[in-house]
Image 1 (tube, rainbow, N blue to C red):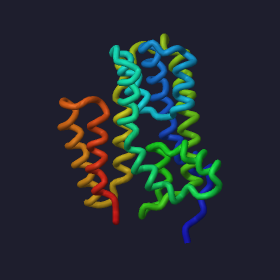
Image 2 (image 1 turned 90 degrees about the horizontal axis):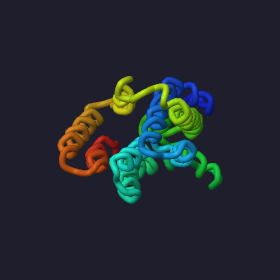
Image 3 (image 1 turned 45 degrees about the horizontal axis):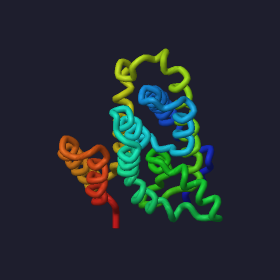
Image 4 (image 1 turned 135 degrees about the vertical axis):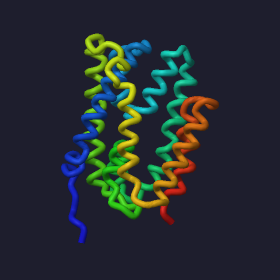
Length: 218
């Protein structure tokens, strides 16, 4: 019989990733300031959106002189992966509607991966604890980046621009358990690499996500 988990277990499991997410938050805070976001706007953006890749994309589009509409489209495309993620974790989010709504806001890549029990099953307590720890780290990191960005200098000088893909790679490795999963990961990476030079930002990830559906078990 499987041992019962608590939200505290999820938070403890998330600590190493929360540290990394906090660093990403600092990076976003710095980039948001450089893109012309106000200090309060950047912090509220992180507190209400809690979508790192989408926020980076939006800040990048605005920084490059793109329109608000273009920034929104880029963010939506990058977050399209939450459609299959949401469907996979939905059976674990039982309870009253307000509780389900609250837990759903904490379903991000990291909490989704850490709450996976195997066989397509997820633990809602692990998800809540991990998601809350990641959320607090993200908002705190953004705040630190906004308030102390001038002291840090350019993110690329510190190598922070490589931290985001490194986290996704670490999460991916933890999800590959058999040949089918490895094949899906490799095909997804190849599709993304082929698409990157030719299509707008966000589309390579969407295309790769469809390929990665091959890794789902029937």
